[in-house]
Length: 415
Image (tube, rainbow, N blue to C red; front, side):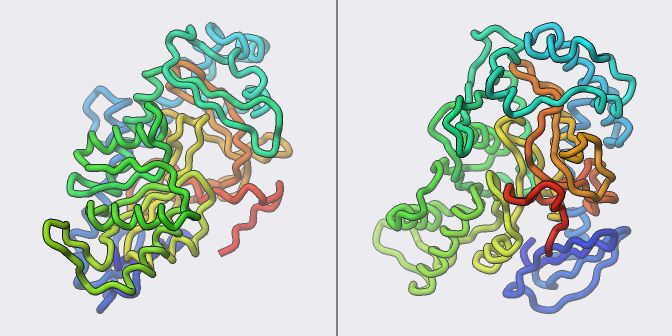
């Protein structure tokens, strides 16, 4: 839906628009937001259908948690499920994990409300690094994937995260449904994430896209400082008809800048006998950025170059790779609340911060079998965006995660 700008009257956040696709504009009033769009790009009815009815994560979660045939997901329904899965996880780790059996022995692990999780101790990165194997809840033979993470700036031991095949299937299922706002079976997605190892993030994403009927090009992480790599990617994008792209912010921007420079020097089309037609401008429709801090001006530059919609994803290996993703409105990220329970705490006191205030992201896995994590402190800073999302989802909204160099206590977001 390039050429569209959504302004949410409840929040101070805005939504991208692409000036080069705009012609004439009109206001479209809905129950909670205003849409300004080009007459040539989208109709009122199409916009309402796109924004208000396309709730793939809500529908997916409803199917996962409710067997009674309810027509829509409610917040009460979701939180009842979270409490149930939280207690199941606590029982699972208390019985099967040597680390958590010791850590939780003096705590109540039969919670009556979600708020009672605040009484449980945190799991730290240091504990994960030094005692990760003790956190395992299954025999070693049940582990199908181990991810090793070197601690930044440290010569100490790395973190190792363990997954069963069932754990990885949860991630594939999330990618399958979380990508539905970005692609459909007509798309061809270029995956610029590690793809070579079975069970790696690129491989899991490819499997999720296949379930959508979407084609994909699993390239791997691009070394964009090498111009020959940029040339190769330009050829892939133009000749294979890439319409969607998933990758790290600065790598994707480097590719976009290269294509902009390259196409500015080309005629509208190039072809030779027996060769595919090469269009002057790559037809990139959507981009998903992940793995690093995503500056707003970088997103605007991608929109300017390609006229695309830029979605954002927040996740980490400890979460099972998938954590939270933009919806059609592009104001914050909807978390994967059926598999993860999120909190935002004051990093100094460990207590929850009021909605709308910045703090440290903490999460608990709700469905992980191999290596569950209870109240894991990520070190990342964000906030809950107050109020319901204009897309109609009942899922919470996590704001853009701040860069790691933001000091504790410095949570004022600049715009």
